[in-house]
Length: 495
Image (cartoon, rainbow, N blue to C red; front, top):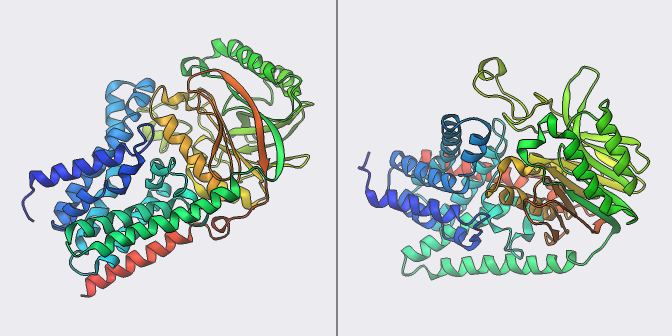
């Protein structure tokens, strides 16, 4: 093992800083296109073992900055010691993916042409992001492609390859720029990078032109952002006060002839099936719209509890519901409960939720709505599945009050932009404390609220029957990256 050098630690930290600030809320998205260059320089000049360490430093720096909000979020619900341990463990876990990536890059050095090496680096990065999204409970936060949400012309090809395709291109161009900087005769690599930008930008221009203009079946939509303080949201003493404040906001929809009203996750602080106060509240506000989507808790015949979205007509008829398919660890359930419950409590007063099994389409009089609840929008497959089941418009219901005044609501929100582009569907977002929005099929934000402010808005949204290439092929691109990565690793072993 070669000795560690201070300059490589510095370069790893530099890459981590550049990448961290490319994500919202700072949103210096252009830095992602060069952020990997110092890390690549480090990996290609060090042995695998050293590169693993430098990669860990790269990742930990990135996540300690971009996901620093984890500490105050956890501190709010536990104590300083538990919050510091838990957040550090999460940052460390996520950093392992960076470590593995730099180790893999070092492993293949000196064996391949720069183009092949660049394809390998981009493919292996995609593989690791895909694994991170789904392994264990999955954590699809701050995938590299999400850094480019503001770069609307570049992100449009997500309707073919999803967010992972954009991550691939960012790493690939970082590699090309590295080889251009390292070789005085490497101008061709720079031209390749420019060519990719031109192709992606041209495709994006065409798609923005095609999808920015309203099309499909128009719906008049109202969105409620109650801004209920997290201190009060789960406190039974404030149930009446909270419901009264929401009812006052919903009154803004009176005589507006709404077709759809959208409320956030767990806007109903209990069980719609039997709690009188909640039943009365729903009856009072559902009359303002032909169809209403309320977030709340439900239970089945076996007393299993679900985090749900209810579809309720203007005549207060409960049509159907969607039960959340992906639950947040410690927020909605405790893994290894007999072992961990003594150290970590559940973050809501209703207790452990059960996992829903289906991505149900909520239908009423020509409306075909695919609802996702909070973290379900982390997973492109869930939105894709509900579109293939017949959804013509998507909604996301969330309670980002968990995250207080941090970067988290902004980082969570941008995932909805990609779900809109991947499926070419309008997405309606209702968040308790913000950000609430309507996003069109080109990923344009047509309406948006301020954060931490109680408000409502009324706007038009559009249903459509578009089925994209991504809808048809799903994450086959990720599987291709897996095959190519494994192929390169085998070749290195052989030679």
